[in-house]
Length: 240
Length: 93
Image 1 (spheres, rainbow over the protein chains, first blue to last red):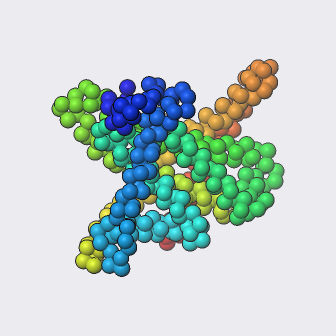
Image 2: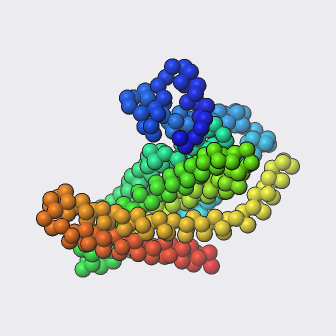
Image 3: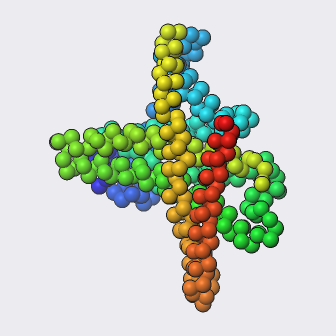
């Protein structure tokens, strides 16, 4: 429906594996062969292979590939240090940088015909969000101990009955807004591209949306990472 | 060495233009969604309490209370976003 042709699904079908016809299949193998799963693996393999190819042998005087990664990783490191401080960045850099690269590649992959964005499935984005959400609580508890509860109690003891539900609701809202924003933006992009391609693909109707799609993909990856950093910082600092 | 220098120039040029923009998008782009999500969670919790926990005996009340708390939580996260942004500006000055 959303995509006319998904080439990994076709290859798997030729190999005799069951491809689900709905969004999620029945049974383990069918679920593993769902498009968002296969394209997640594709993204992972892509990142690993490209990283291996460009960074196979590190040199003092970097070549083109190494240069690209140095700028990308260096820029991300600077950005995280600016927002979270050196200590937290050293601890969490691998996780957040992986999220950034994965989400950016996964968003952009959907612009190529025959591919789909794994992030246009709520399962992927919700999984990412749950990891971030649980991690920010773990950071808070490790940094503040039992005093982390004070984050949810508001400024004064009298206001506790009022502030506790409000803080809890706004905390759970993070779970919802972080996952649905990424999912919604990318799903909208994918669906719009599919429909425009079906209606007037011969007249290059999807082209403007593709240009916007590049922007949306990068901005959404950026926003996800920025909010992750903000949540980690807030959990790490002492209660007001 | 030459290649590296050129890439770095490109990077600084780009960052001057778009860093501020991306920062603003990241900080303010999610206001609407966070607000709505807070209201939905508050009201959903209220409906759950009314329908599932108390079997509809307290019918409209927890829904309204949940809605009120949800709206309050929405405004609270709005204030948090603004506070965070203000702090960032003060840090820069």
